[in-house]
Every structure is written in structure tokens, then in C-alpha cells.
Image (tube, rainbow, N blue to C red; front, side, top):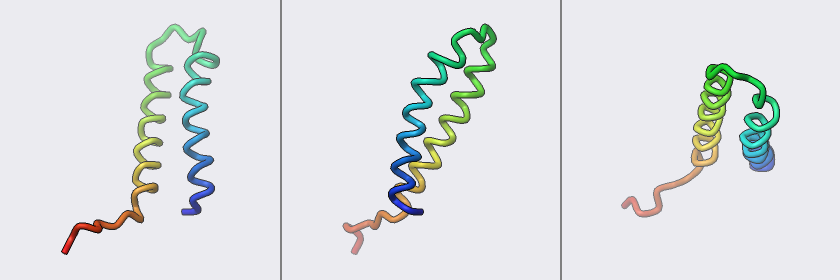
Length: 62
């Protein structure tokens, strides 16, 4: 994946993790609104971590 697009994806997730709970879900009284958001955000963060570390090499392996 293009590193530049990956950086924008990371920043988008960071901004959404602040904006969505405090702006969009502020008036949602049910727990499943935030649970769905944090579940999707968590899976997105895991996917971005996998994509970021896919090209890492083990330099200490002989």
C-alpha cells in the first residue's frame, strides 16, 4: 500500500476517534451506538497496524 495513503488513513482514524464520540454520538443514549463505533475503530486500527508492519524484516535473524 502507498505509504502516503496509509498516513492519511491513520490521521483520519485519529480524528474520527475524537470527533465521533464527542460530536456525532453525543446525544445517543443507547450503549450500542458507541459500541459499534469503537468496534469498527478497533478493527480499523488493527488493520492499519498490519499494513504498516507488513514490510518489516527481522534483521536479527541469522
